[in-house]
Image (tube, rainbow, N blue to C red; front, side, top):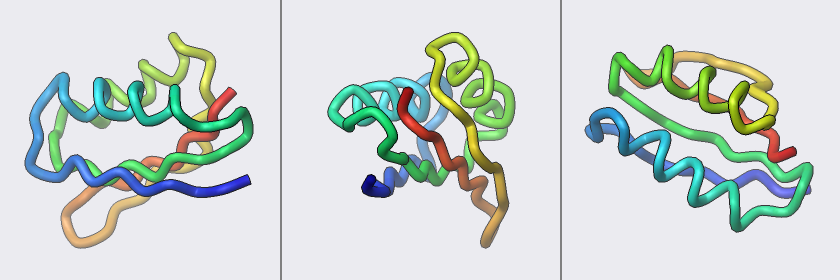
Length: 74
């Protein structure tokens, strides 16, 4: 299992989700993607994307004004 970081700070909807989707496709099942986002819509969009696509949102935290989403590829 590996953890990959994706920095989408400064990008607006729908780019954080689109970039996360693309990056997750390149990962093996069980790998994790750590997404950094500042878009307020990401609070709704990323959890919704995980539910719709079957990936697991393991945690949501905040650091230095950015949300950090840890997604496990399913």
